[in-house]
Length: 147
Image (cartoon, rainbow, N blue to C red; front, side):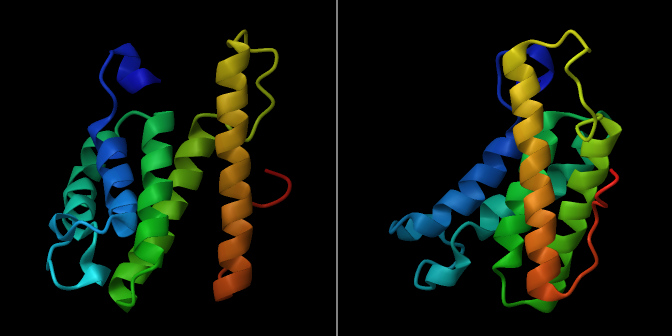
């Protein structure tokens, strides 16, 4: 993927990483309201959310990862509207993964073994995360076992 075979990393993925990593930083500059720790990463998250549409035109592994990270970041919100957005982002990640065939055996596709493993890990993370969300919040599974 390497952000469409270029050297640069996906700005969407980087912003998602910054958003979730900010929660673990003691630096008040990582917060949208410096005196409120629960606002850590909000600015990065909002910027990433505004970029999502630009990355939905072409399926990329980095976009799937960014959607997962943003979904996890938003899941921890106490705001119901934002919490619901988390479920939507995970759904988008699942559909993009299926569009890319991550749910299929790619061993005969001639991919680099590292790329195969990368795809498998992303798919299985999606699968497990989907099951955890279903069990935790009573939501229907997005991935069926036959997928």
